[in-house]
Length: 414
Image (cartoon, rainbow, N blue to C red; front, side, top):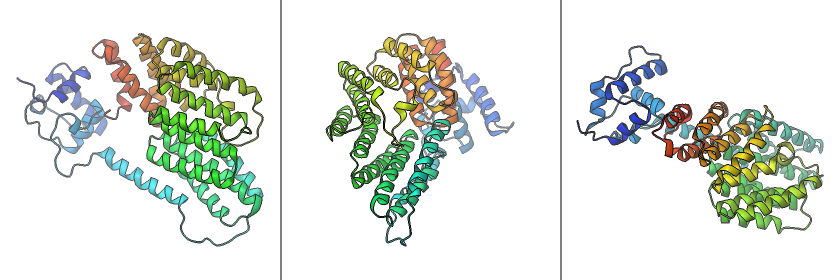
């Protein structure tokens, strides 16, 4: 038989299903478990038709089983998409988009608001809540916090409209920190459009506050998004603008700008600049003495700057150097920092693959996948996709099939 549907055949072989009969049996077993339906069955004859010239279109429950088993929807497996088909994840994306529109409305309250007395103690209240949100982000990841933090931002925005003088400026400062956190949560969730919007809100409020520290912080926030967009020159432009703002920038803000500029340098292939910036930032760490409630990752995160260096080395393809650094970094990560640990593990696995150690990469990846399933961090999922690409030389080897099996629960058809 001539296999006309090469996409499905390739996916079958990647899954380790060497024959059509074996594929039909395995998919039937998978569907029975997934759907809790012992009558679910795909026959060898059906699978042969799928791999033929006219594969047709599977029923919706079969489409879901195919996606869960092979990590791809039918339209990515060579099937002809019927009119009106909306794959379930697209429906979920639509729900998420409606949620984003609702949350974004928090930053765009139209019309006048009723004036009210604003007690100065509210500034301390929101600052204390902010620290709790930072801790919760480490434990939970982004999805469970976006609604809570953005609702508090909405309240701050409402109070700013009534507050005056120093109270108003204090609320603007804390409001900028809340907007920055919402932007970060969206960035971690993989919605760069929403992240960019909230980074813009952060910058607007920072400028309104007239606080050069916050303005610098907001520019670094914008640079973080450009890093995720792989725009190295854009990252460097924004970080240089932050560092040019004022000689009075606090050491913490300078460290944030310098380490982010190092990421930009790594995207342009400039290792010397990466090392120079990270080394210079390291010299500023002992000088941090501010009490600002935001931007304290460099205080909270063990080996913060070596994390940045290891990440930059990974982008530069320096597998052995990056792997050595990740071993040191991971030794100091507390068990409570689950999301960060998962990201670091995924990057460590990529470095191991680049160092030609595929078995070690797969071993490390197991831990990263377990955490990715808990936190649903899009950053972590992106790193795992990068790992899959880095492991392509071993795609048909047993270690490659092991990795495919490990990644199957978090695969989204990429």
